[in-house]
Image: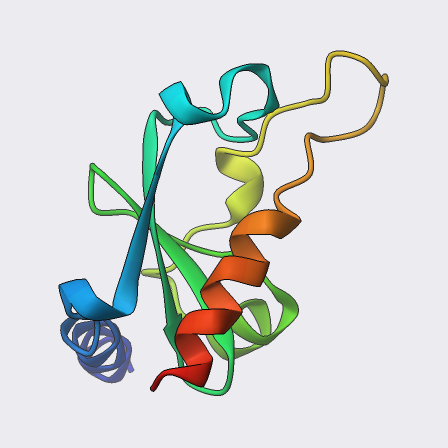
Length: 110
């Protein structure tokens, strides 16, 4: 089973060329940056699954399609690991829907 997950992850990563990814940086978003990492690379895979990859190589699903596709894949991490709390509203997280929206544009160009 691990071989299958590894193969799927390998396909997922290799299917993303630089033309099919978008890079977002914390410096460009200031306090509205929703992640604990300084940079993410967003890409589309599968049926409109939007993922991000961090500089350390970890992969996180950003939308429902990606979460569903990867729910049994141990090589895909939970986005909650890097998703920051909203300092203005107790109990809420900083929204990251703009990254999903931009990622979906990549799906249209596939």
